[in-house]
Length: 97
Image (cartoon, rainbow, N blue to C red; front, side):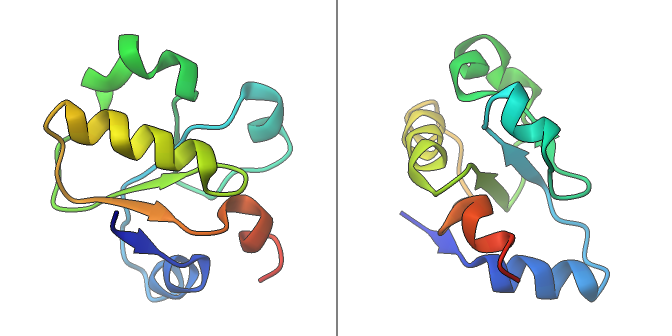
């Protein structure tokens, strides 16, 4: 599994890079805060909504701790998506930055 740290995501965003990020947390979690420009698709909705995810060279998956985004990674990889990266530590680590 390819991973990316919250520190690297933040540094790249600060540099002005446009990152393609999918947040798979639940609605109430996202209501408390989301990384700007991230697209919200709850993990449970991926089977119906995966076609909304653009197949790019890099797709960063985000959740609270890295567990659900890891499940999303496995599922999307099974569907043929490439360029996936799981943000390690999830929003728990992001909030410490």
